Image 1 (cartoon, rainbow, N blue to C red):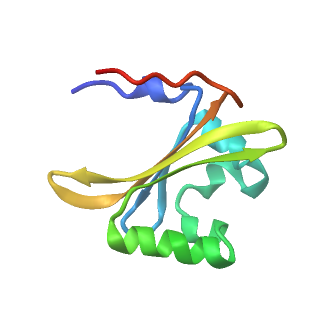
Image 2: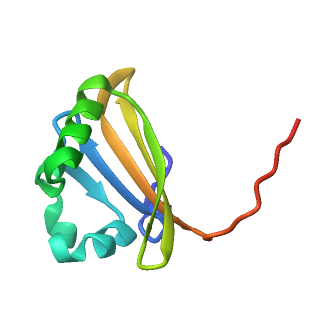
Image 3: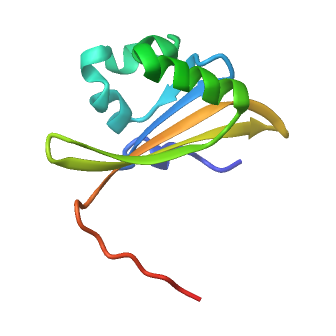
Length: 113
């Protein structure tokens, strides 16, 4: 069985929740990102509670539809790629993984064939 300890200090915030939105795991970057909301203490709570208004409704729809959601944001001069995707255990829908990765404001884009 492979070890997943590499993810603990991975430089992107990785948050994992179950099919109902209960946070199961966070790495160090995720805990730091959500430090004001409780950091590691968020494990065991529902991620929907961290999303107000229309954001809450969108996350509810994503959980129900088991759909992927990918976008970029910029806040305080930091640009991030947000990648939210369903994860599966033995072929059954198990919840969502959110990866939040800081990216340069301007970055090269290559088209390869």
